Length: 328
Ligand code: PBG
Image 1: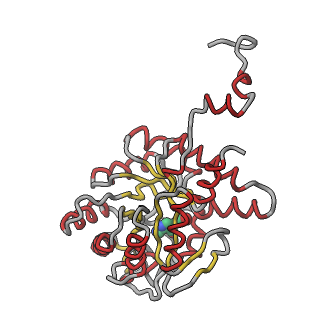
Image 2: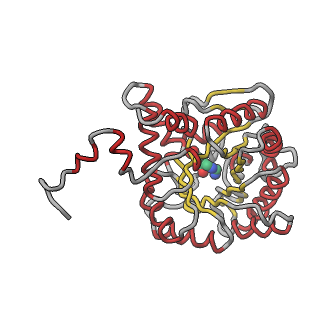
Image 3: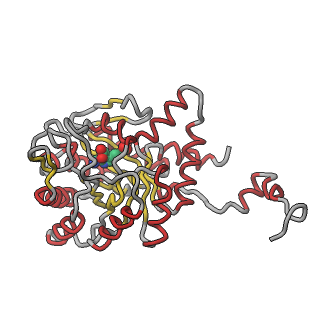
């Protein structure tokens, strides 16, 4: 390696054209996924106070958002449902006319080019807000699997393009894969939230999805933030059970995990830049302390550099717009 003054790092930094020649990581909107929240009604659009730029909408408005995303260059959305009623069995999650099922039918009919990924979890549909069946204060693993499998099949029947289980029960990928195969959906991919950490960054999402547990927390099933070896174990378990792609969530606090997962598996890896990560940037942006577009781009770069193929971001449309406009 040559040294100063023979080598000068600044030579290739002098103009944007020179910088772009040697840029190691190139961004495109192709790997972006926009999360969307759908609720009952028509003509409904409510902003989520803690997530500027994010709304909860009825199905008709959701279709517009899906179209707008596609127009902007975002090819995929991740759907979350807010049902009108919750119960102890999360029945809204697997109802034939459940809110997500309705949304998927309309979206795939009216915006067929858009990839529709369905988040698969019970917490939004459970009266107690936990991701599984609750008994005596405990979230039961095996009885939950059956409900998750039913939900997966019902989302598949509605026309989902990818199923994304986010519950963190043991054995759920295997249970979902078997149920999908049995129902004839052998070609439907599973993107598993494999390394999902119990995180303080989910707060704004729980406001948006109305899914905070009414008692206790999710540390009995989501991962301990301290554990990177265990994250790999979770990833390998899900791959062995039939996951086609794996997710790490949240994103920035777990860059090391993203990198390891990519290196060790070679599978498609998704990084979820979650609600709290997004909210922090938008709040600082509103105060004039940070430039949201620049920060979101820098984060997108960081996630791609770490090895993420897919990036799930509430700023996906902003990002796609910035990428079109080019470096500013
Ligand atoms: C459902 C689910 C959550 C998120 C995605 N799926 C919330 C949670 O686990 O409490 C969080 C997404 C975000 O914060 O943006 N289990």
